[in-house]
Length: 317
Image 1 (cartoon, rainbow, N blue to C red):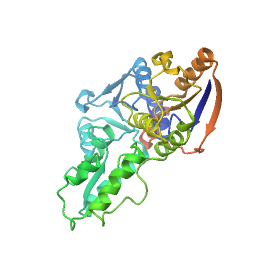
Image 2: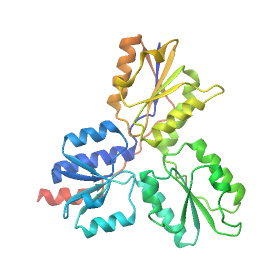
Image 3: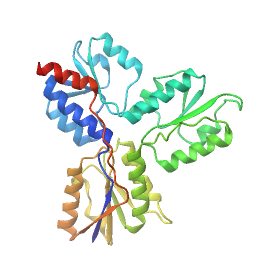
């Protein structure tokens, strides 16, 4: 059996930055260290930090007063920042810069008087944070049907933004519906769906037709991992069976009956060691032969938060 290992896969620059932020904050601040929401949507990453003494909370009120709190890679609303300030918290912001970009666009369009259509999944941490920047100006749209149900007139100022981890295909369909209904809609200056999401989806789209089965390493609450699974199932003329797994223990040998080629990839929040565990299992149990398939090279990186660097300097004195 051939094991086709997709590249790029796994951690993106934003996830790398967020994880390094928590690692360094544990060393600087100590534990318990409080993190608002899961730092990234991956069970293994979260469990590892919990074992080190990190406490993940869904409400700022659960953070003791005058404690340090890390904001997750998905971003937070201004109200969360205000609540943390009122509690005397030291805020360490691990928001992905590409999410911050969407927040800034939302603020700018709201100040200019636009009605903003946010293409995304209601309830996702990133979408909740973005809506919080201008709650009176933002309407979430999840499908072309949502666009058809909008009550804005043709003369109303309309702009759209997108969640950074959406399926490019799904976003394009919704954007097409928006443009058809509101031809003068204002679009973002640059693409909102992040480079890592786009690149991983492109790799799966191009490689999955060569495979009999696709394994996507990632957690069920990871939006970009779920989208990779869906893209594999819909790629090409027939689609390819695809499974989303957290790790090698979730693999069912029955999936591989008749499979000559298996494509392995990972969502942007999935650690590489989990990918390698799965590859080793396929090599050991199915005599797999690994072939590396690079679709695009990535060299993006983000600096650690300024607040963390300030804390590091203060602790060194």
